[in-house]
Length: 253
Figure 1 (spheres, rainbow, N blue to C red):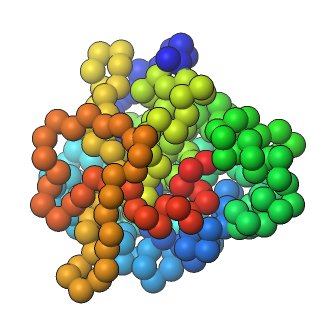
Figure 2: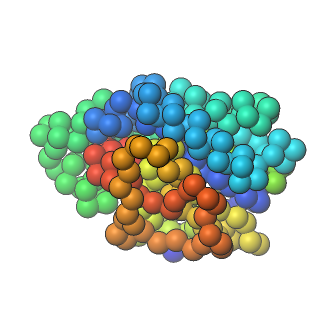
């Protein structure tokens, strides 16, 4: 377990929501701090997910919404703030894990150009010589962003696959040797965490909205993921790992 002391937050419930799909997600490109927009699928995902979050009980009176300042997160978050009628807070500390020289490249291109780095990444080992950020730096800045949030019952934190992973690991006390214990968030999926004294509990992980009838969807549980659920997911949602994650570079940072 990670021995890093957690600061007290003014918000006892967090929904960590990954942005909708971009064309680069579909192509398996590492995005990092680069800023490709949502594609048509991603925009539709954001609209469906926002409606479900409101239906499931979010209200303007006790919810704040904060997002990374990258547009794929901002557009996703705006789908929710438009429904709630609340302002959107933006914080660059919630940006994706900086990937240095990998940004803009596909997995195949990284494997060809930087085979040793790619092998370390696949094995969840530290990646040296890539540039960008270390996982601990990502967790530090993301936690700092949460510390600065104003009091509210719930904070919806719209961020990225790598940053959400590092943030959950820090809050749940998962150390670097056990990274990827949790399966990665799919595009536009979210996880719910609640504070219980000095500790955080994971209530739901990788919840998303099923596509409308007529769209193909294959849903399965990703091997190696663990979750603790307090009750049954809301109708129209599923706790899942999307098969598209196998091609989604940012999902497993």
